[in-house]
Length: 315
Image 1 (cartoon, rainbow, N blue to C red):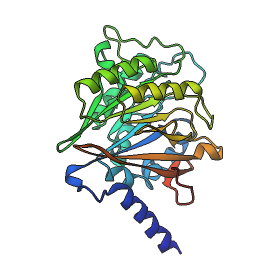
Image 2: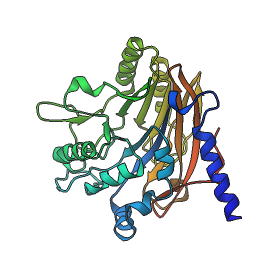
Image 3: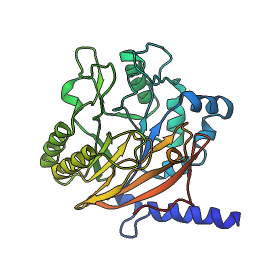
């Protein structure tokens, strides 16, 4: 029985990552995961079991992709310079090396916790990610760069990725200034305007929007999420992937644009069942555009994400 389960798991991953219409040489495969926290309960697990334990069941899936993107839900810094807010996180900078080893290539920083250790903590996070070969998303040192997407390439295929947070950020002035970097904290309308400008200038380049929005622990997207998704789809987004609610929300199609309102957690310590049932989104591209998308259910046990065979695969 164990051999059958392992074989089935490998078969699922094989078909998720291989397109019959294109070879690996002319495709770009991207996976997107939800919230990653290395503090609180995850810190305890890492101290007792190590980072290899946390990523041990999912790293092969991440490394199989050309780009693996997660939402980094805590600053990585050895300095403690807290801002005044309810929930404050911090993780050691060694976590960046563990992320890279696990196959993570891009870390989204546009969320409501990247600033938990103040401006210096934000800068430390970006720098230690960079030093470990991970690209920061949604981070900039000047206002002109905040609405510029990251370009991910594989051979002749390229994809633009926008990362932004639209929910309120406690006790933080989000706009960049001299010697003051920031995360992309904006409205969906302003983000959509940036997507439209980029799409009009580069009509053949697919645009992925990775967005921090919605209401925590709500199984359904808010009306505002639905409105914002429609605005982003009309502006030229090819796919929209949301995080922040810590639970899985509806997946839908807006015309030809797939929308995952929330894919839930990825590496996290919350205890409730619905916070530990999450998703990885798999997107596949060629020079002609997006050729496929899939949803890979995952289960989180003891802060450790694992490919889930028992979860019902969403449409």
